[in-house]
Length: 496
Image 1 (cartoon, rainbow, N blue to C red):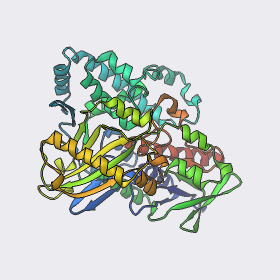
Image 2 (image 1 turned 90 degrees about the horizontal axis):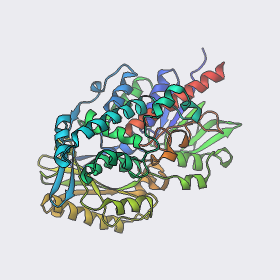
Image 3 (image 1 turned 120 degrees about the horizontal axis):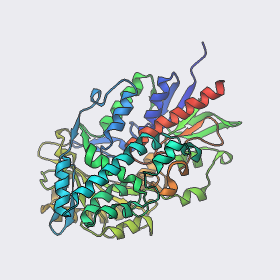
Image 4 (image 1 turned 120 degrees about the vertical axis):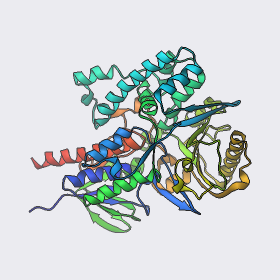
């Protein structure tokens, strides 16, 4: 009996765990190598002084993607964690005592839009119908392609579908066809910021996010987003995946046109295949010998990255009724903030601020009578990061929070931790300290992203937020599946 082919997966984030489990199901001998002490990558979790904080992703959208993943292994989401649908999904503060909360009920959403822009109900209905088409085609067909070549998209059926995606229209121009009210447009466009772009440079395709937001709903896994990670780890281990923590890959050894081993903490680990689900730039530019790199430093420098983030994890010894589970402070003009991310990379003067307060939904995450807050400011990657800069923005955050809530909060903070560029680099080898990956611009979509397959190392494949499909938790899970499928297909071809 021949031995099982050995696969080393670099990184135990969503894409790494996904690819590892698909490969193990097919009989491969899979080991995941993780540099940190726990799984999840940017979705790790930490506890301190009675508070539990998810360190990264906080929005549970596209619930069908999670169900699809677990169903591939004969499981359901409910086998691992309990989901709560948030109502309201989130609230947005526009300043001047103007606050909008998005209800869970689609009928109430129609009423809300009608109150903001009389006569908009029918436009919203049409907008969501088109968004559903984009979702069904985009998620059901396009993101399931490995995007090795544009030829994959030349099939008549796919070309016909592509015409419905408005790929050549910007998200901004698309929303303006339907709505005049600036608050409505801001509500529709805010997910784009977390996809890594502005409404002006992101294809209208991504209105599919609005379908997920308003129709599928915003959810929360009880215990935090880390419950997803724990579920994926459990599933992986059920399929005999081995996960080695506190181990960092420092070198990939090539012989001919194949990777034959990696160096881990000065030890050599042999392999037949590698799935590189860590930072694509770091692995290709730092771990591979120069002659085996497909992309140059110039190429990477020209990529448009999604934002990095300045995050504050705060424990507060009081309840804050004014906050919802998700709160967005959009009381400042957004264009200058967007320009500071994409046009003139710099620290923003008056940033938009996002607050996740999971203690509104979950008593598990904070002591009784307390709140836990994750406060996030999207900022350009590659900026100078210092304690002085972080403290300056912490003061801004507190002033804005106090203005919004009407409470004096500074003396109620009993735990505080900040996280920004230097931490993303230290913990994840993140290129320029990015938090989300590549921006979803038209020229960085599908086969125009860095490739899943290495062109120079035949048994090396990439997964994660810097390759297809792109940033976000559901795309990362899909990315792992695509990378596993590419490896399996390559292996079968080699055995013919």
